[in-house]
Length: 486
Image 1 (cartoon, helix red, strand yellow):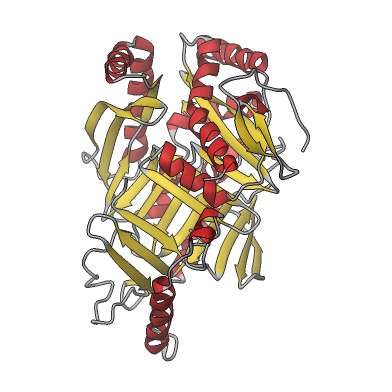
Image 2 (tube, rainbow, N blue to C red):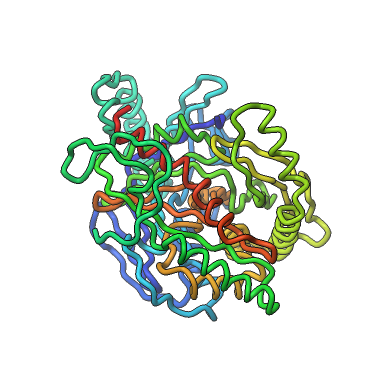
């Protein structure tokens, strides 16, 4: 579990990007609409609105004892407010314009980028058992300090109200948790045991993992792997990451799915975003990129085995994974790609591999993990860092641009939120983003998940199919738990 749990209160202002069309919504109404050449540059400009130039810092936070962003409240995490949301996979169009416009469909229909202005947050320090309520104050607004104190009193009073057990069991979200609160294609082969499921009619029926419908058949996925191997043999690429999307009707509370994932698959990045008609629920093991006090960090994950039934089996699988030439070669290649990405924005000579080929265990799989860091150049910022590292090589392949062209050719739908980034850019300039994997997207009572596998020269098509299923299995079981009722 992480030390801090952060709840963003309902955001009044949202930034949405679809293609090159940008809208800003305030209190549910569109107040700005613009077509821009580079949406990432627009994000930088938009964030700058919340900076006070004379102070050289963000607008707050302030505590009642007079602490400011220049002398922060002790104990708070690196994030206390900023832009929170996601950068979908289609953000690659702004990073690599040569990829052009994506023509394939996406049934989800979510914005390519969605960011909330998070000025009020509740932070729980799980280590110390302390709860912080943080409000950012705009000094340009008359009487802002007094209004912020009144708002603090309101929030503290609300948090002191005890939540009733029925509300929790139904997965309802309070105001303080709200913003933190089909045509069927080819069927999968039956996998796993039957579970209770709440269908569109609201009744219970017994289903298996086969009720998740893939955009690929297994045969189609394996043919795509075969085509990828042809590209590798021809020298076009060294690796490409192919993924499959799976869908299922879902009528349970999205918050119940988050609670199930926290139980079944606790991960470094747990997130629940209630975006009105869209919910994003995830338990990602991997950062895309982190920027903290001038240090850039990426943490490539590549190389996978399922978990064993016993500790002895786990250790045997770890040894097998670390001695597998294919897995080692794939991982080392992606570490080199991570070093190159960080090097684009880091001071010369500052890039380091601080952890190399460590094993991390999760509920259903284990991975090889390394850590790459560098010191940010003085003329760079969070948007530059995002641009340099997006998307992660672990979800695209290498070389990145050609791998992404092949992904576009072979995958039947656009990826949407999957394999993009979920996280924040703080008012203080820090940034932390998780790769949107092990993540469910819920819209119109349909749940979408996606899982991929890295294809290299000695990949076996059936094994790569099995890897995608192993990676998706934590979500399968969390959906089953949520639908049965927690």
